[in-house]
Image 1 (tube, rainbow, N blue to C red):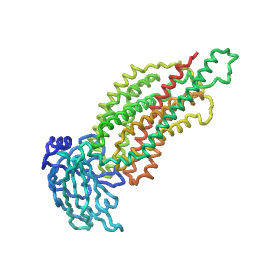
Image 2 (tube, one colour):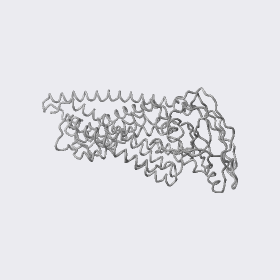
Image 3 (cartoon, helix red, strand yellow):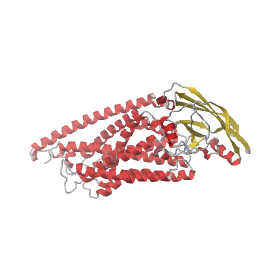
Amino acid sequence: MQYPSSYYFKVQCLNQYTDKEEVVLWMNTVGPYHNRQETYKYFSLPFCAGSKKTISHYHETLGEALQGVELEFSGLDIKFKDEVMQTTYCEIDLDKAKKDAFVYAIKNHYWYQMYIDDLPIWGIVGEADENGDDHYLWTYKKLEIGFNGNRIVDVNLTSEGKVKLVPNTKIPMSYSVKWKKSDVKFEDRFDKYLDPSFFQHRIHWFSIFNSFMMVIFLVGLVSMILMRTLRKDYARYSKEEEMDDMDRDLGDEYGWKQVHGDVFRPSSHPLIFSSLIGSGCQIFSVSLIVIIVAMVEDLYTERGSMLSTAIFVYAATSPVNGYFGGSLYAKQGGRRWIKQMFIGAFMIPAMVCGTAFFINFIAIYYHASRAIPFGTMVAVCCICFFVILPLNLVGTILGRNLSGQPNFPCRVNAVPRPIPEKKWFMEPAVIVCLGGILPFGSIFIEMYFIFTSFWAYKIYYVYGFMMLVLVILCIVTVCVTIVCTYFLLNAEDYRWQWTSFLSAASTAVYVYMYSFYYYFFKTKMYGLFQTSFYFGYMAVFSTALGIMCGAVGYMGTSAFVRKIYTNVKID
């Protein structure tokens, strides 16, 4: 029996029912509790289904397909407000192979997930006795569904009927449904899945306050030290211009003014550099927009909506990438702008897709539901070639024509100035390593909450915190890179472009190092699939974060450098 598409629209979108109307129980996935991403189809275990006809299901969104949602009809007969006493819906003919499959699942603490009216339900497959010799399967699903008017607002599952697994026996599977009135409003029905005691803990508030104080300190430091130092430098340089050559203190001929003829020299590898800056600006735009949408729309209430929104916003903001990357490449005298456009457009998608496809081979080997269907791969490629690339081309053309002129306040010398020797702690490599410590310190507590929501069974919903942390991260990153760049220029080293980018981007290195600590000390993950999934996507996350921080640090530092050299009279 095939249900018409209008049925799905009514049940899954409007979430309104009439008495005795069909309520669908979808079986989603099953997998080990400690490996949240290692999931398999529910019926990959030898469970049996009810007698009702199968309802075909398709992935409504791209996000569902990428997140491994595999909804299959349970076959249970459930009607709105129609109570069902304990009823046997099927029997499992338990042979040795099926018993071994259930025993393996019980030993590895397998949980399964179901959905009723988009509300998730979790249950455990079974349990072992204290000695671990005998294993028992939960056979009775006791459903209690709360309703408010003509809407379902609450679902609870109680697993009962513990049956010992013995080969060559029949195990009856049963269920019951009890309906009860509830005062929970439909728009508040997901509140029970949230964990305010975890996300709104005093530690979370204290970390935000601590980061905010760090911002005040850094902004004050930059304003006080740099502006006072620069004012002193301006006064000294102005005084020197009024003095005769014989009166000048030649020992004071040092500092950032001495490199004015080289400070706006194009960076090394300008094509890669401009592509990274463009990609970083796009990632920042995506992060800002997605957080705002999540704050307004409560995206956690819909399966895959966060990922679908992120993909749509990333594609829509492709002109940002082209504009900033293309304009910077033109300012630095780049001529292969088409190659730069392709690299900028496909840098992040290639990194994400490459990691996803590598993990996909492991998922296929494991027969996991996380294996990305071929049709989804084609859809992602079509988005890259027919949406991201054309929009990036539009942004590149606009960037080159509107702000691609090299209008630097200082003329660039034909011959590069030799870089003098300096103390070891003023070397760019040392500055890069130290530059990411303070930005990481401002976000590492929030990283714990984000990691826990993604790698454990927590729903992240405090997007106001995330927005505040994003703003704090940007301010801290800009302040730190400005300080680092000023000291570098004062040492008469004009290689500030890559140094400012990499010193800000080094935050990602500390985040990835923290992910190792989180994996080994905060989780109980195990196995090849979960390990490759974790470290693969953490590498993608850290790299994207690093590119974003690097772009933000460079843009802030570029404005600072342009400002100080504009205000100095150059002979």
